[in-house]
Image (cartoon, rainbow, N blue to C red; front, side, top):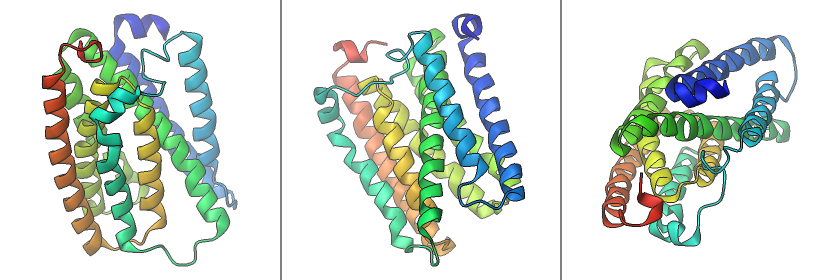
Length: 246
């Protein structure tokens, strides 16, 4: 894998993405067979997260793939990620699901910690840097963001309706581009991991109300567009700074 990472970095990213998708599907199948509050999928993704962290650390790629906190000056350029906080909190406008137990919430938290870390490392780490290695910053931001959103189409196999799937792809593309821009500014995926985890938790413990969901997604996309334009302006204004030299 180390050789592929150096010679074919985009394929390196896609191989790990495929492994991730396969693990999720295996976990879901096993979870349906095992009557447990903590699903097999959750446990598999936590193990996979540890494997990925070991893999990146062993090859001394943590800084390269953004596994470090952003500098305070970089955080100020992104207004401390306040627009993302708004997007995460918007999910609660649907209200909380009825009948949630403590173990249900624990399972969601464990699962979404794994999902948040893995997807940010794969898409804003491996794929983004793989495209950037032989391409432009614009291509890296757009392709990694669009691929992230479209990649959610695999959830059709998990029982998602066409409307739910369409909404997820739309917000996935918008957020994917924003999160890639944030990596371009801060060289860190850590805030994205935190946001991704919090967003997924709020989305999974809130009610399934499609009418409200459409409004939440529409408003979230508006916030993403405005935020993306502002972040792009930051990149243009600070191209002379080391963090922006790509």
